[in-house]
Image 1 (cartoon, rainbow, N blue to C red):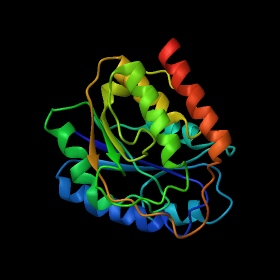
Image 2: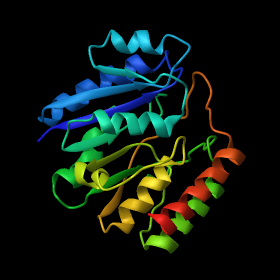
Image 3: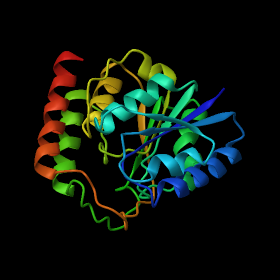
Length: 227
């Protein structure tokens, strides 16, 4: 069994090196063969240079296309039986990889989502406010019957077969919702585990609450109606 860790990056030169290094250490403790795949979404800072120095698999998109395209490119390159996604801005802790992976490795579920809202700590949600996330959670539960507290989390672990039957189309941040709806509709088991979340202290988020929120809503409906 092999583990693939996919890290999409766009202008995160101050954090990407640290995330890769910590992900290596965390993966090494799991005891499985692993690969780390960095997908550079045509960053104009030194993100690519920093990643290349870490001796991991690095791929660059030919244009800046968005997180969804970057993740899809990573999925296409992944060789692992279990695939993990983690953000590159430092908000997720690679040290919690074992907790995110554990239910999948135990055969209890097919996809695990790391939830920011299960640890009962205050979370400063700048990317998408809590009210918006609750709406997305409610719609997903209404359509699929799966109760989720953090449908927009980018820290996930899933079996390879979860992705094999999906024809993902999202180009940007709505990919998390599309994946979740299609995974639940296909009958795969989904669960959450609590994770630590640190609001970024470097750079700025590329998420526009209105524009990207609308895209997420649309993606939920489309994934449910068309699959």
